[in-house]
Length: 319
Length: 286
Image 1: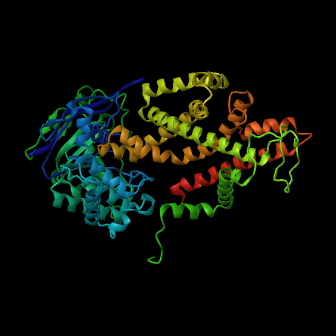
Image 2: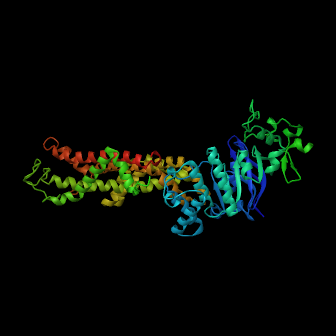
Image 3: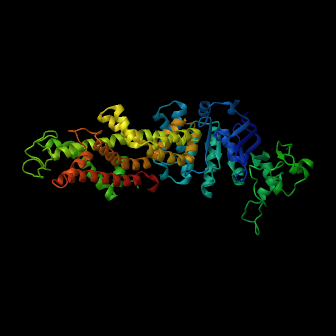
């Protein structure tokens, strides 16, 4: 059963210099208990996509398309209905654990308020549940430390606290927006391990936004590569990473630094597109080494592969 | 590590404040002034209203009970200074609380919601700002009548404009921080976010500004009293006493010196304390 079913989702912002197209006609589904990784460089629209799912895009943004969460259309919900889902059935973990906790409130206050808001239980019961989850997430001495303030914890610890907070209400879907970007490498492995373990324990469906293919291999079942607010390639992790079809995916994978490689590091030439003046055709066309005639004028159609993978590319379509 | 005793939050606060010598001394001085103002008048044989035309403009004298001398109507200055202090401090506190109450909520709401609501609310502040301040207070006094409590409220009701602006500015920077987005993601209502996440983060700024507002309000009160609209004789305040003392400055300097010293000490202590409190509330500096 699919937990999240997004179809034709666009997020546009009217600005003085034109319409800023942050997300363009993105479609994907995530099945119960699986993990989708969304990969792309900065400005590719992956965070806006998450914000649209959480219902947190700016008031003046134009959001079109459909977001179905457990047979419920999220875009048709009112504010209070939305709020009863956020933090309860869909939770989110942010990139920077240093600034995601309110410096003036104790961990206990910040965790219990989520439970008290959604579950109609008293403070004491909420505190007990919070402590339990902190222990599960690897905070030693949680009973005492829960009364501490954010500045008393290290970055890794705070990310654990944030993950614990996100899992408090046993959400069906957990969105993690670059959960390991702000952490050092050894901490990254631990946090990824924790996410995996929690997913296993609670059967949570995960959506991970990242620009790190290491995270994708470690965590995800499916991966979606985005560029200029559009999907470039979408499929099983094993297929996409081993045999990338889209020139952009190939370029991204080739520009990953490795320890073995010597000599000049490969990098894609050119800049990412201006979201206000996106190319009429494929957004990657100006930087693409395999472009064909149609790339400039028309948007590429979906090319389906036998294993369910999708690629949006004229060069592949014409082959 | 286990030997560290967990102190209460107040205990930790005092410990850190006492590390700041000037602030700690200010607290002690303010406590002394406050208790003197409350208990002091009871220790004298005189009251603040009885006139004695045989003892006009007496110099301070420890033997006859007029410890700080008498004024031009022969009233005991010691009692008058302390009872005036009661009113001055009370006006300072109540008016500041009103200022904080209105200003913080107004500014936080304007800053948090932003856009059209913000523009509308802040234009209203601008309009009120443009009104002649004294005129406004006097108008309020005329409408409310000469009730002492209403004087407090009237001053506070005019004084919240600065607070609202400061709080709004601060809110604008706080609301873009990630923990506010995290709170939204947790499904908290807008009011809960303002109350639990924005306002606690404003505390430092608000406390510092409040300690600066108290002396300001005390001075405003003395001006209103000078115009004859504030505290009415025989009741008095520090501002009124300083004004009266100024007239007798050549013949009886103590009439000016004692209330002026008390007034300026209080104002100075509040300023130093405000500075200390700002450091205290900045948890991240720890």
